[in-house]
Amino acid sequence: MNTLLSIEKRNAVLSRMAELLEQERDNIKTVNQQDLNNYSGEDLAMEKRLLVDDAKIDGMILSMQQLASQEDPVGVERFNFDHENGLKIINKTAAFGTIMIIYESRPDVTVEAGGIAFKSGNKILLKGGKESLLSNLKIVSLWHQALEENNIAKDWVEYLNYNREETQAFLEKPTQKIDLIVPRGGEQLIAFTKRHATCPVIVSGRGNNFVYVNKEADLQKALDIIINGKTTNIGVCNALDKVLIDSNLENWQEFATNLVAELQKYKVEVLGDENISKATNVPQIESDLIWYEEFLNYKIVIGIVDSNEEAIAKINQYCGGHSASIITENNAIALQFMEQVDCAAVYQNASTRFTDGGQFGLGGELAISTDKLHQRGPIGLQHLVTNKWYIYGNGQIR
Image: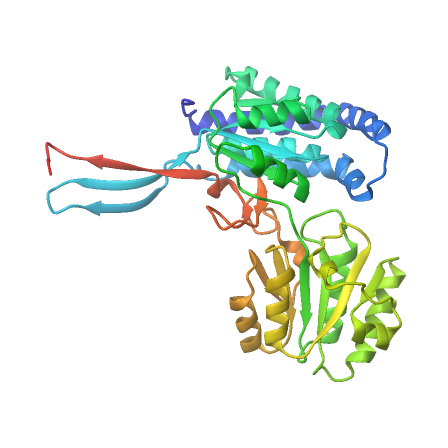
């Protein structure tokens, strides 16, 4: 069990980490360039996530500063009960202990996940992908410097430089106690972790997000939201993959044609169901299985539904449980949609690209959970805790 560090010590390490990231900015970019040069480049989304530029470093620094200024998530009272026999019973948040995160190609996770885990009183084991090894090792060396300068053991933030076989062996027989594992990445990574892990796993990563254009939609909003969701960053789990259009929308064929033309300006490959294909001449999907797919690419599927109920049923059947948005000016229909769609985040008239810990005011996230236990959606500082009961007596027996 890790001894809980005082909040002052935890915040001092985070503030120092922010300073070190600024000081080492050029070195981090140089090291990252080596990772980029070594990367084969077959996966565009992976390459985008691998790059560390000034904007990403600014984000890392901001994340450390925000975390340092946030309230301590540990020791927060959640329940207080006075028993009739005089016992005082209190429930408070407590650190998990040791958290392992497995992730691919994103050096910023080495900063953000490390910071969130450390601030919430947890030791973190970072298992990054081989494609970002040099960037990750550089960032971990800064963590170790910040810890040592504050007289704290380096093993609070540990990097596991393991290959696939070593990772599997570690998951099946950990050489230290692990309380929680968060795999953050593609479906293969998640399946691999779930298959081999011997402790609780929170699944994060799968998107396949939907936008439903209801018959009472503002079509300019719909167009802007779809373009934003699809084209601003293809390599993230909150990107948009599927669009459903209400056949009761007046002149839906005209809207669909405009939408396809707009998407094609951004070099997006557009596929449609039978109705959309006939109306807009885009290629027709070969099978309904494509509705399950997350693309992480410039690719989108558009389909027609005949009612709100059909839209809700289709989203619940195919989506990844991450995010879904309805475009409508009818608030009652929006509420029905939001209550019945089974996703971590549901939207009215906004882009799915906002499903993100920083955007939701959490000061970053460890991951975005599509599980329901113990936390759903962005996992921020406040959620990286378990709880514990404190009972004060003066000799009571039952």
